[in-house]
Image (cartoon, rainbow, N blue to C red; front, side, top):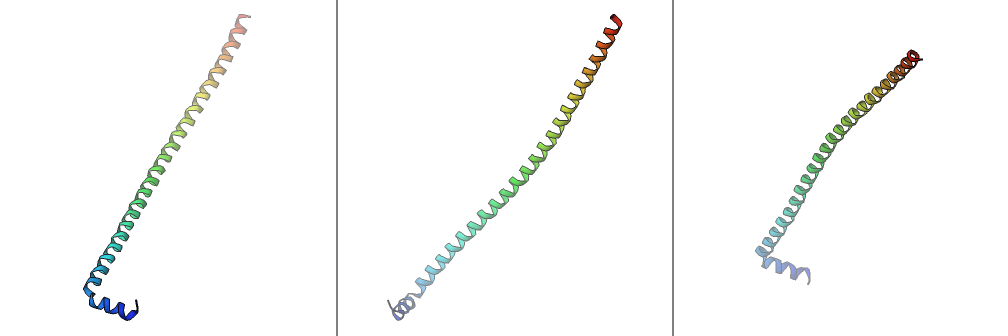
Length: 97
């Protein structure tokens, strides 16, 4: 089809082509807006997940610190108990010999 014939066809049916273009443009904008909303929601969800993981990691680090302190105190208690037992054995053996 030559340009002249195409222009006559469009010119004769201008309202139809105008409406088709408007519908096509609305559809393109709708898809674009939907994509933008989905992208924003996904980004917001990702930020919330990162914040949740940051808080979780802080809690885990704090818990691990408390566990380390507890192990340290248990080891100190065992060392004191062993030293006390050594003194007890020494005093018992020196008094009964």
